[in-house]
Length: 244
Image 1 (cartoon, one colour):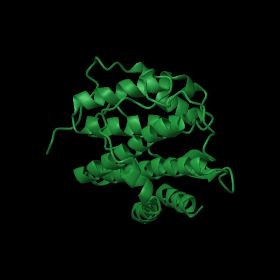
Image 2 (cartoon, rainbow, N blue to C red):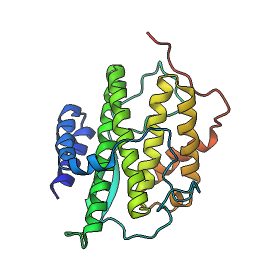
Image 3 (cartoon, rainbow, N blue to C red):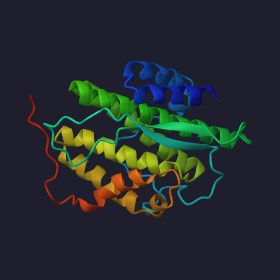
């Protein structure tokens, strides 16, 4: 599938620090999913997290549907370092996702639709990550605002997948990454309420049964997200550098 090829090519560029080239390929991939984007829309960040073990009553979370024929794998650019002047409860999760298609052809229209929504969730997450990375590198607030818009679209897409098609194991990695990186942006902006919200629901997602059973998660990722179980949202861990 051409969209998968463009996403993975962009991911390899991101790992080599070629942010602008990666954005171009990801935007082309996103254009191929324009109809899905229009269907999903965008919800606010402050929403119940779409995790089947969180017991929040999200319709469709407990249905057992056929898995979308894809797997996702996180890859990282080792060269990026966080600005040392910023103290943040969240460490930026600087990984983007490769996509591997496990079937040559989808066997039914419903499975194809689910695949398209999963692709949209991954691609918009990747676009958010590269925008956030550029915000860290260049210190421009508009990069963070752009990243948040992409993250919110990815989050809304995941909610749509759960409501329409049921739970998919690939979603756990995306959910943890989204809560983490959205929390990172909120903390940099000194938005205490939204930072605590992201931390609380990241902790709940990590505590979910699906987190322990996620085959897509390597040991490093498991340790990275598990560290947030040690944080308490009742303490003042949310600090950022003073505004210029």
